[in-house]
Length: 161
Image 1: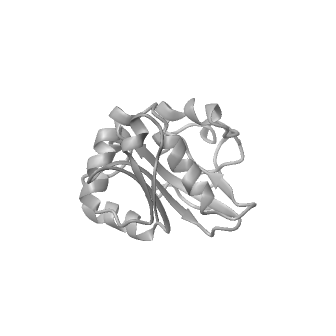
Image 2: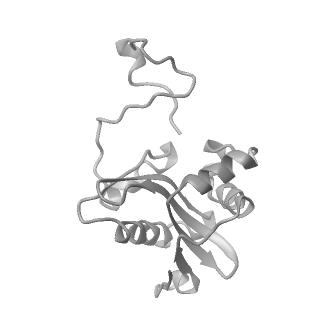
């Protein structure tokens, strides 16, 4: 599926649903978006695996250049985890991210929730576009032991992706 936007800067952007994306294009976008500092861009196999396992990819293209992606994992009915929202810095604040999210939601069922973990630099963006903050999220990093209780001080800190 391909959709062409009708906005000013966005008029040159075409949006595609589940268009294959190469790991190289994705890594390049992550670097141009600022999200590379939070993703293992040095590990091509990891990036390739993430792309292959994602069952909903909405992408924004300026000609042959990937300028935005909403990469999600979803059951399409109850929940959709938006794992990455990346927009080239030159296209940020132009509506590309909002359109990527809108097209992502368009693929989902009527009661499907869209869930994400915001990068610290983007935390103020999501409430501005309608997301509600929910404090019920819990994270278990790969190196964290399972079955070992957390102390009160240890339950609210730590880096997240």
